[in-house]
Length: 495
Image: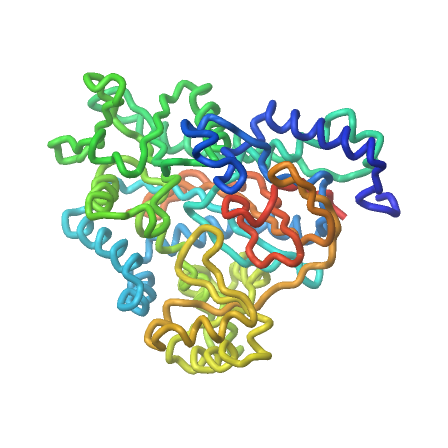
């Protein structure tokens, strides 16, 4: 790599590069609906405008050893979380600790119990996921598990190919090692595997896949590319707002409880839903009233293959991550022993990616963590996380003590306390809403995975690593979510 990286640009080079990136990004779908603080609803009342997604001007250096470690362990993580999703007792023991103070988690659990009482009819589960890592001491430290928030799939593909256009040849050395990324095709393949398993049996109607989405959705272009990939393979795909589940779907009056979808533009036409891919439903904001919960129950009790089910969603809760990762003495058995044999090579590989995470309950570890969380000095090394997916939910460093003191202590157990990882310093430039931000940045590597399994027999029907995502934020920013307005899309050059 050149001595100066990213390279210094003259004013003319900078303007030419920005012009090229803006046009190239829009032309290739690296775009979002503009945020309200950039383009007001009065200016764009019909929501038809688009702007370049936040993106770095150059690929950011990322340690090769960390990248290879994170990608190599992904399939083991897929199997681990499939096992956790199958272990209702394990999840129940965890959920019981927080449902008293977290109504959202409690309501998800109630939906599961209602379907369990009636009897689940679909035993095949599909779990798309993303594990997020920061590099530390030349190893990958896992900071996040997502089973619903799989944004920026196509963007992660595009941000790599973005570096192929000719202009960069003059300003970026050709020796950059840019790993191939096929996240859209790989995640599409996972959904196709689920669709084909369902469609191989006798169905009432032609089958389709439903994307459950938020409205409005700024990140629509990323989602559309995954839809287009499925459609290229002959799979009908429909977008259904989460709030309209009950308006356009019904449950067949059969023992299989098939989910039937009628497109609003052609209500006389009926499709049997083979796969429901949830791009909504991960937070309380998607459930403003009881009808939204009835809609989620309708999806859950149906025969459609859910991506994910309630149990798979709960397996992705921060509390599960904490239970697996809380440091313990060598004489204490690892929670992983419940799912892996001691001699299993994957056990050590998984534990090697764990970050120190602590409960805030009344256990000995939790009471010790409470002391750290309210200490004005010790808290500066930690982040406080609730049981939520998506950016903008966390509390960092010195903000932790006053935040906790604003809550009843009985509510503290619904949070986890994670040690902050400080990656090596990197510099880059970020294009966001037409303006350039230049300086130190922090990179987070997300590894996508797909897994299809039989909930009843534990048979693994498909398991694969499905590409990666590099998100980069300014080193003065705590949060890293691109959709939440903090991070940006990036490409990684391995060093």
